[in-house]
Structures are given as C-alpha cells and as structure tokens.
Length: 376
Image (tube, rainbow, N blue to C red):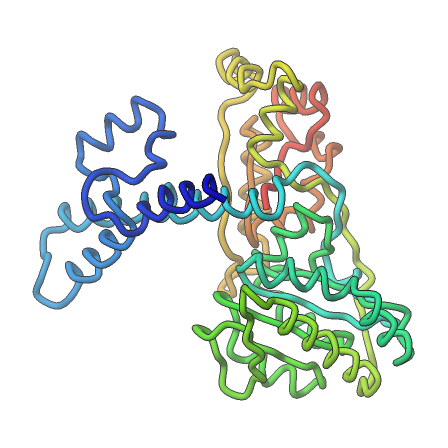
C-alpha cells in the first residue's frame, strides 16, 4: 500500500505541479530532451500547460505565432509524456501488460442466438467490469432462461482495442462503424463512456430497439438512459446493463442481419513484449531492431494512430498509407481506430509480410511477427 501511495504521489505531479519538469521526461532520449530544453518546450505540469494554452488563445492575448506554437508543443508533450504514458502504466498495473494473442475484428462476431452487448468509449475500468459481469454465472443463467445461448461481449473504438489486446475480446468495428453495428438489429445493448460517441446513436438505437446507456457524468446524451459508473462499485452499473440487455433479447424486434465477415490478427504488442520478442527472457533488448535499422533492412518505425474520417472512404487512408510504409521497409505500430482498420485489412497477420519490402519482410519472417504491430 505504501508503494502504491508513493507511486500515486509521484504521478500526480504530472498534473498538478506548476514548475520544473514532469516525471516521465526522465524517459526521453538524452539528445531529444536537450532539444526540448533548448526550445523551452519541456512540460512543467499538464494542468498548467492546458490552462495556459486556453488563456493564451483567448481573444486579444497571445498574438505571436512562434510563441503560440511553443506553448502548443508544451501542451502536446504534456498530453503524450504525461497523460497517455501515465494512463498506460496504470492500466498495465491494474489490468496486466498486453502480450500477443490472436483476436478477431468485424461485425461477424455478433451472434444472433446470444445476448449481444457492446462497450464503446475510452475508459478501461468500465470494460473490465463488464467482462466480469458477462461471465457472472447468475447473469449467464438469466440469459439462458431468456432463450439465449449465452452473453456475447464486443468492443468498439479505443477501449475495445484495449481489451482486444489484453483479453482477446472481439472488436465489432471502429468509430465509423458505430451506427452500422446497431443497424444489424443484433445489438441488445450499447454502453458508452467518453469521447467519439455520436449523438445520433440514441436515435439509431430507438429505430432498432437497442438499449443505449451512458455511464459517465461528464458525457450524458439527451434521450439516453443513464446508468452511472462508480469505480468503487463498478458492478452496480455493468450488472444492470447486462440485465437490461437480457430483457431486450427476450423482446428483440424485427429482422437480424449480421455480416459474415470476420478478420483474425495478432494484437497485444506492448513495448515490454517487443523487447522480450527481440531478445528473449534474459537478453531482452531493442538491439536487433536498432541493428536492422543501421544495416538498412528496416528504414525506420512509424506510429500510425487516430480516427477514421467520414470525409473519405472508411479506413482507406489508413490502409493505403500503411501499405506504402511497409512496402518501403518501414515497420508500423498502431493504436486506436487505425489499428482496427488495419486488422480488417488483414495487415496484422504474419503472412502480411508478403506486402512488405524485402528487408522488412526478412526481419518479420525471422522474428515471426507481422509488419504492423497492434499495441491496443
């Protein structure tokens, strides 16, 4: 408990301190950190940087573009080296560090004879509790009493990518698929938390009889049923969602049309596992990667992340960009909705190395990995 308290106090500084440097800059490569300090962009504290950029961009305040870019950089680095890195470390401590597993994506993983529940959003606590709820013997028995063969849990968006990588829970689709999955008629309940939740999902759910629940007090939607999620009593929320989904299954209206497309791939490449994969238990190291960059087999590593965009054909930009990168011997790491786009395109299988350049393909074959690594 004392260690947990000390860890909390150290990580809290990432957000609350107003001077100095956030703790995780100690992980920044020395030359990079030297450059950041030279240009004055090392974040001092996440809350300070956010409040400062909000103030500077108010009417009539900071009107020098170089000064604004400097503060934007500080804020962005606070988000990445503060918020995202802290969230990753804490999630790994609480829920386990991902390691590679074979898991499936796409709507074909819906099951007509099961109670189908989708969790959509960004907070892992809700999804981890839902995993416990759908595996509760009493709730499974209730589902079977209602005529179902069982309870089928799927993810969407980023928290779905988390449990895809940690537990192999199937992923129904990324941001641009959230309305389409409801239109199958097979979704008995969708529970959402924060970010990327389309307002129209309430109306879509009404059209197809799907139970739609918001769970976070910061993200309510007019017309949705709100069942608040409390971290200290998580099952109160998730058990209720499951019970109402079972009720909907008993009264599931209309015709169910489930696309039969299912795509399998390898997910769960945490940086800890990549280190082990390249060097083994006793010699875990990035040296093989570095050596293959030095000798030219791999030209570099690119992180491709982010959302799909309704202005262009779904997933097209992500898929074509990554195909071109691996063709040119660039190893790609992925997170979020972009990861799901590449999984649907079959690029997260070891045999996708045939699409890579000769150098990257040789490394993938030697290590036994795909040319695109899904990180969650």
